[in-house]
Amino acid sequence: MKLKLLHATPSSSPPLTFSAIQLLAALVLLISLPLSHASVSSMTYVPMGNNPTLYRPGAEPIMHLDQLTFTDTVLNQDHAFLVEFYADWCGHCRAFAPFFREFASIVQAWDRVVTVAVMNCADSFNTRVCRENGVTHFPMVKYYPRAARHPSSAITLEASHSGLQLRDQVARTVVNEFNQFRYPDWPNFIYVNVDSTTTYGSLWQGVAESADYLAIIIEQYESVSPQFMLDLSSRSHAVGTRRALASSPITQMLMITEFPYVALFSRDRQRAIYMNPYSANTLNELNNALANVKGNQPKVTVTTPRPTVPTTTQPPVINCERFPDRCRDMYFVSETDMLKAMYMALHDEVIRTGEVIQGANFTHLYNFVDLLAEHFPVLTFSNEIARRGRNDLKRSSSTILKNSERARLVFSHLREFLRTKSDLQQVFANDWEHHFNSVEVIEAVFTLSPSPSTPRGNTVRAPRPSFADTPAAFGPLSTPLPYTPTWTRSKNTEWTR
Image (cartoon, rainbow, N blue to C red; front, side):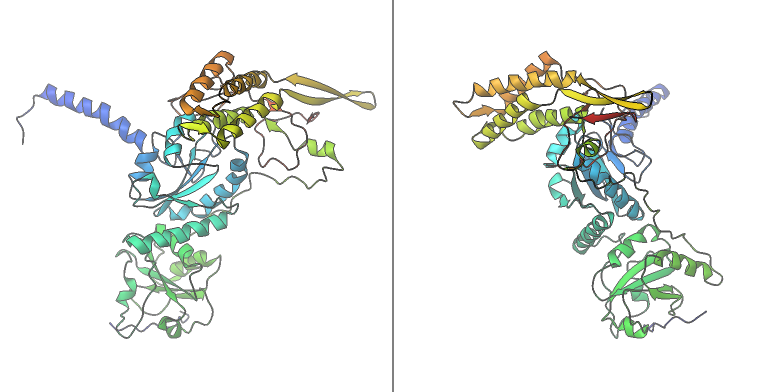
């Protein structure tokens, strides 16, 4: 049938004994089932380990990964993944979390093409996987193509503080992958090429046979079409999608003068049943158009993602030079987070720099350890407001942070160890790791046991440092910490220098 689109108008082994069969079945059940359930993650999977997570398993459209599930889930599946590698103590990760959560909600309908996932690299259970994937900073966002079978296939994206910008990055990356591999079960991102030989049926190329409707988006240049097509990808069994450029003859056939524009067709007729400029409400309008088709019920309910409710509030802008006392309430940090960060920096990060730490790296390491030995905070201060009659009296008090105090001893031991290597200006990473572990065992500041109050996975597979969750006072800072502390304070207590 020749293409003639019309503008829309209103309208065999030896037999086994019975007991042998039972035994074989039991062995298969014991061996295979746990592996199948444990090696591939899901949206309700709770990651193993002891560290808290920045996202809630099962409560958000975000899949959690760990060392047990990463390879089989991301690298051994016929699916694309967008993974955020983070550290639960990392302030930048906490600041990024609301935007990543917003992004995951926006692209929830893309799950047949790409899955959004996270992995906590601060948990020692995941150290090896994070290292194999080249995680050098937090947060780090990586796109794993559908054909990825090795970490080197991943593409690093920008951890943008915008859910929409993250969406656009992923959409462009998905289109690039499709142009290379042309997956038949992905949206057909190839622009429609219409000429004198084009038939109406050829427009449906790449559309599922079960789909009775086809939505075509026409644009002057690639802009919103990837997003639109991915938004409808989970409904591809009912509604197919194609895209065309404004220079296509389709534009003249449909008398379109503004872009981007969306037209909806049914398989049995060439007259459009819906035509409108593309907008944020287009998906709902398509749903209504399907519902209004005479004698047809909509095959699918097309909805827009629920708006994400902000999980954090922005602090008020205060002139800290004029009002230091008011700023002091906002700028403080958790002792737990500081000790986690120091453990990772001095243990995990240093030993992975190479076999030998020498030259400038040796100097930088020494200076850093020296700074920690001299200035790591060991006190927290608070002002208690006591009411006597009509007057409020403010009384200052200080508390020793015992874990931080022992941590200074660890830093001092490490500094003395580096001094013994100063003539050579080098230290072997294995020697550094051995000395660090020896000193830590003596001082017991990085206790390798789970904290009773720390959320964790369903099984503890590897220990991690656990510290008392006590706020350490650093006094007013020049800029606010980009995350909300995990502890609570009474109304009559403030943290001061």
